[in-house]
Length: 484
Image (cartoon, rainbow, N blue to C red; front, side, top):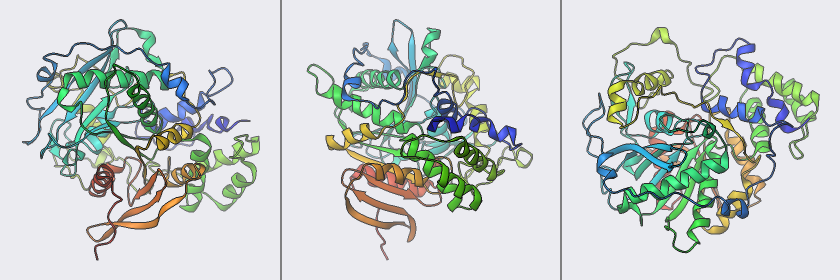
């Protein structure tokens, strides 16, 4: 039995065991469905991306964009507070023949936007919304109040440090769409190609950003999206008569990078955080071979046992409360420092309001956090692609909220260890407000950092620390040591 087989029931285990799940369409459930689909009848998944794969993704559709920037300007979102920055939203067509178009939301920085870098944010899934999650629940300038109608300001939004571009990708996710139904079966390669085509056209629409320092960031299955898009950008930058995108670095959070190390790290995390029994941990370690990825039926039994032992908790943040609709108080103001576990519902209500969709310049859509897209190609490891990026000299950061149980910090550490990089800066704590904000270690070519007290969606739970972390990344510095 292969590594993939162990997840045959994982996506359904919460229901079978009677545990509540906040939503059936979220980043982790979509990831579980993808892994579950990796069977003998599926296309081959084991081969990592190579430079040959990347170079075969062209050609790309470039469409004139005159006048589109001003047409995308948002005068005001319904229910938003007063702001001191410009924001834009709309569609960029990536394939005019298929009628495939991707939705974006762009928030410029309130201070010195003309000199600050451009940052692209991608959520994972695969097939989940960078707007609904990233912009509205994590690092964007607003959060949604419990009434589902009004917004409040996120004082620790990442557009304090950069101009932030959120992309809903691939088609079928959020507001992004295609007029060709077969486009809703897609995969890593088309997602990278469409995202790159989007960037080329978006930079034509916003030419003032063509020479700006550019960074790609994301979380969860964006551990695939981000490195793959970065590899494509670097490959295309080498070609004559092509737009040069000034890629400076990538940062991926709680990222699914390598199947073997991600699964091994998950079960080790369960045991070390008192979510699994000693007996289950011994059974997993004795019967599961994470080096070869070949699992026995006994291994699968113990892994399934481990999935059932952690009980009724939010595995995204093992210490967070669950959403309890009976305690909600519609109309009460939200707090960016106290993440509301029912936020998915607020965001969905808000983005499905007709006046909101009109303000965002989108067509009438039944918006959901994650789209029902089918996936056709996905390598089981992204480590070779990360090695290519290290060789290119761009900045590579892997960060991890340390109380996420699904793609935990142990998975990130095991993945980085597979790269066998020498340590240049020894493991140390970093600080914010004279408290430990996390820990950091600098390898040759990669920085690994944690954010203390953060779950899977790091900026949701620790917005201040997340802003310090990403600001350090953009400045090319490690997070700050103690000032005491």
